[in-house]
Image (cartoon, rainbow, N blue to C red; front, side):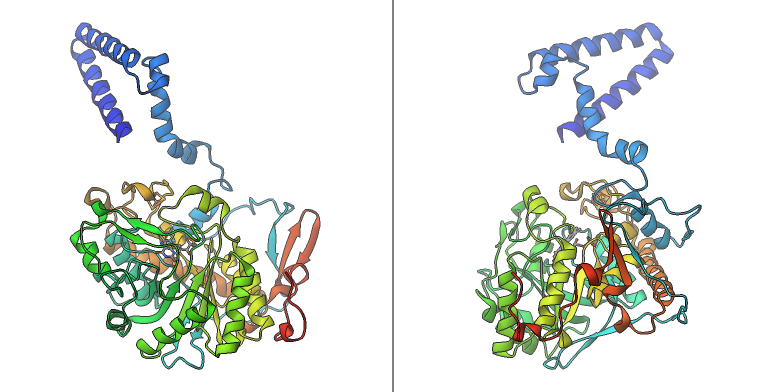
Length: 508
Ligand SMILES: Cc1cc2nc3c(=O)[nH]c(=O)nc-3n(C[C@H](O)[C@H](O)[C@H](O)COP(=O)(O)O)c2cc1C
Ligand code: SF4
């Protein structure tokens, strides 16, 4: 705030001086001198900022440069393969597909194909016929009476509140037009989610949209939303990669009448999402909760999302699946490098298992316990391109989701201000002044285009690999270089045979 006021004042002063200097040069220079002198006196005498106290006037340059640093870096310094968390190449990839612009790349790759961690797929001398229909995956095990035919590329969880209402509407309209699903995020189902797109309703520890006044799970309130025809699947959020094990706070100031009504809380009060669920305390409780939600929803697919922390806890869940006979219909795997609207930096940087290890671990563990057959593995985390989808499916996922890719399609420029309510593109701000920039009628089509064009390119990769069925995608199809050693994923991370953990001890 202080920086914004300072910046505005400086601009006004500069304009005033330029105008005065142009009309009456003597007065203009006098005003300039007086302004600089006044600012200098103020800087020396103020006590809050050491830099301007010690370096009057010029010390302000630091604040100015700090304020526009990310933009300077992005526009003037950043290379095509630079840019964090999403490099320019990938951002451009999304923009081009969203706008149906040129999707070819001139003159060859810019990537260092000899670099450590470089990955590439194996194509075939005998490519298969290009398939024009988007592949779909049926989600729902034997206990599910309303299985959902899912696209293999969907919108990952992002709540109304972390995204603007315009963004939510555009995402939902895009999902409807492209026949893919839109995950509500844990902030409940709002009217902005109801534009005809298929919904995956996510339930977090705050039980928004299905809670009692005290914040416990309410079966009655759950049922009212779960049976809505647009709700196709229900996801229990155990954790998300960017902040696993961390709850959230909805401050009283952001808890408007509208948000309170959507989330089922009292307006203008502080609302806590605790770090853990109150509806269950152990693996058996989680599975019983899955069963309860499935029954209350009338047999819709129910699963859970997690970022892997302690491996033994996930194995415990698998063992309880065998003991209780209750299985989730899907498991969503998020990586530690996943996105968020806002999270404490230590949680983002140092908590949770990175995506690739996590996906491999979950796929292998389910296989080891012979549980993979009826459980769909959904995954998100930095899946932007057709190759990212191809690789995830080869590792063992069935369905991919994207959060930040869809934000880029909406016009996000990676200004990294999502937690300030001052998102310059209106994607992550509910301030009407910023939100007006995101015109729903323009942007829903970009979401649809990005998803469809990416899957079109996936179909081309799939054909180049010589595959005719998704079942043929496996770890043999991708190579990975680690230092100077090149092996397939199958060689680096051998697939676990189905049921092997009944005979052998599982690895630590
Ligand atoms: C703005 C924003 C809000 C998010 N909100 C949620 C949420 O409510 N629930 C959740 O499970 N994940 C949430 N996520 C995480 C994403 O759903 C996703 O798992 C993660 O960002 C990895 O995907 P990506 O790399 O495509 O962004 C959010 C991510 C972003 C960027
Ligand atoms: S443009 Fe908006 S949504 Fe994108 S990173 Fe910046 S603040 Fe966040």
